[in-house]
Image (cartoon, rainbow, N blue to C red):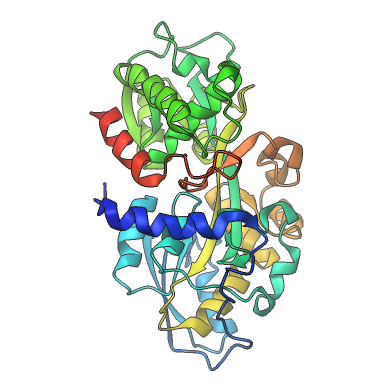
Length: 396
């Protein structure tokens, strides 16, 4: 994992906490955003960092190519140089180099980019497709800071509980099976390898230990944080694999190395579609879950900002947003994308709950924790540097 300079990280996160202290409504102390009022002449290149599957050029499947058409749509300008990354930490390291114009940041990265001054405010008026983004994805704490937009929502999904139903034959409905010392998956558990997983423990405790008073799994004071960390340390001996690579997790489930764990709908669909299919079941447990919403963000000193604006509009256009959602396995961000997705994969938006805000009301989307609790507790919550340090201790 990337090593951070803790004092610098604390100071940087204080900036985010200050920006968020009044919610996303801004305030007199928040400086006016500095962004263009129009798109200038397009550059020749565009350098992107993104999740695997977000920048397809037809090399993997000729039916899924939105990079080449994008280049054609801008008259042969903005030639895309795509760098794929498998984790948010890898994306952060790449953005730290200053060599990339934009990144598909999940909520466990976006706040860090803003805190470190690596994200540029975005004028959403220059992204025509922004008007059709699902309202629930706009003005959120993982893409908007101090009332200022720092990106364009791309897609979202929930973290699910999955198990090999031919090995674990009972019905499951709770995350409790991930923490029970007598779990049928003991010794073959899989959890996501990121400090943000502490929120999964907090989410479980929010339902099972109401006396802790947890209202938001990303806003934990010392007592709440200690309880979540203690739960994960108890879980540690039961874990077989901490995962970041979806393909590797699929392989481990397929071979039976893993029988129970956290996963995404993408892995589940891939295993069910395999020949022969893997006996896998997945649910959103009764306690709810954590999840992710990805945002295309622009580097604060991007060399090709005009092309980046064009890309953000292109990738969230109905047809392209649908292609990405189907290929990657997620809910699209554009409301009009579901009609296009239906042509490619019937029932896609139903499977990924794209139009189901009741479903996503039980999903706490990744948000970088800051010292500011967002309530009367003030700045007594544990920030990301504390989460990072605790995660290292949890894994041992």
